[in-house]
Length: 463
Image (cartoon, rainbow, N blue to C red):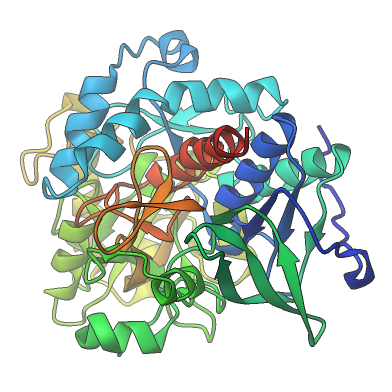
């Protein structure tokens, strides 16, 4: 597998008038569905409105959740689909679509195996908030999962000749007189074109960067910053709504608790940092929550602080387990010091209080008993290896759990709950899987599980 594949988009002049399936969006779901469709004999094309590929998947850093995998067993972790289902169901406020969730959890291990069969090996584990067992699979290098996945999928698609057009904005989904999908209208390099295809897969992502849709569904969040890339504006949702698709749970928007917002560009600090042992402290240097509670709960706890912000505190041991921290440091987001006292002084915290907090935490790790907040995960190692580090964080809009209503076959449903012939969707553009709170590590898993399903079901539909 190529370590770093140099992607070159297809030339606009190479765009054909007809394909078997048009895939809109080049994040994880779009790339996976294209590869699966191609391997099943279809001629897919990927259309991406942005000048670059990868979407929000490029920003994912923690891992890909899956249960009952050989990687887990090698680490002595005996897991089950049922446990994965229940923890995701509880974490989502029991508002998850049972059929989607069942398909998702029971096909998660297969998704890991499918990636492995393509040379994309995720053989290291970490844990995310809301999970009781290590399910977040990532590369052994601990490299951020998103860019690793996108880079390798782009290389694979190049090998099998799947064209990917950037700056290609789909403006309309087309149906024939019988109501079946027949293609799309698209602007490519400023020129309008019509592409005919009997199947379309929407993989356009969510709407975390859309002021228009936030105003419509969650005006209370308009003042929040977002971790999303600028293209996450809900295009696929809007396109499908225009031809009668049903949406659900659009008001369910996730706020991520640990986002660095002191620079012009916001940076999500991945959950793996806490999963590997980091703690959160307030402006006094005191812990105030179970750091690996659900994102919803941890965000609420930070927002309840007077400053509505906190510090992630960790040591060299954590840094060695999360490669993304090197990236955060390169952007000037990380404060470092030789000792906890020096770190506290740099952060303008009380040195005695922070030192005492670390002593209490290390005791909790040693005894495996967090008497303050009941944390039971991410406690493999004490915070005692110099240097020590801190990142200033606050909650920001991260993920939109609502979207297009699909069934477990990734088929989009209309306002009456009927299947829209030829229209499929996968990834954050869809709603129902996560309930009112997405568990960290489930979005990458969703792109692979339902990206594969969309590609498979498009092939079944066209057979």
